[in-house]
Length: 355
Ligand SMILES: [Zn+2]
Image (cartoon, rainbow, N blue to C red):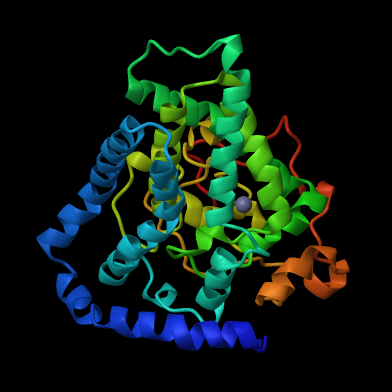
């Protein structure tokens, strides 16, 4: 795919200087290999980040819902990137994933562009939509929400309930061919790294924003709990797409992070149609779509097996769902509902290893 003007400009102005700066860490990265320090970091980075985010979330929420706290929240995806990119460079899961072609440029444009209002726009809209709905419903009381529980329990309960909705939306995006056309934009990535978690088609983003907001608005937890929950989503999200080589075995049975999500991006849909959870992985375990065999390390070859020529420019990604099947997926390779295993017979079971 030839670069178009915007992607080329982005690559020259932002991506190349950023990669040049990050390459300075390569020497240190090789020296870290096999050291005790690296092993300690592999085990501790995720739980420490989880606790720090939780603490920071409550600190932020303690000031209430102000312009500043909302601004901090919507800027967090970017701040997160600035922190995660050097860690990826220091201890990558795959060195092949450290630098892409024009993909960072595309993702940055998607991140910043108003037309493709992902990332920043998505979180802003989500926060504002949820908070305004909560405000509208406020006079009717907090209904079912157990506001007497400790704050931390409320945050994780909220994410767990929201993730139930997210699980089924994500699964439908994979199993319903019409929806897959839009979700495929997210799976077109050929490497997983700090920024490409935000790569989604705007049609999917709109569906997500309103679908995810429903449980928040109906249950009516306090605005502070919603803010901390969003903060936690961002933290867990960093470990979902991040190209960081961590030892997460225990945590991978609770959260949708690390290898769980690498399997989800496999080109072969027999493996890839799994691990749909947004933050938690427990819904996958319950509904039979968890896939993470023991003693196996996922490959770093990812993407859409049936669409090796998926458009990789911003304009291409936007129009891809509306193109004829053969242009994107090849004449005989479009996913059909007959490919989807019947609900009574899940293709994957907890702990089941594939050959
Ligand atoms: Zn997916």
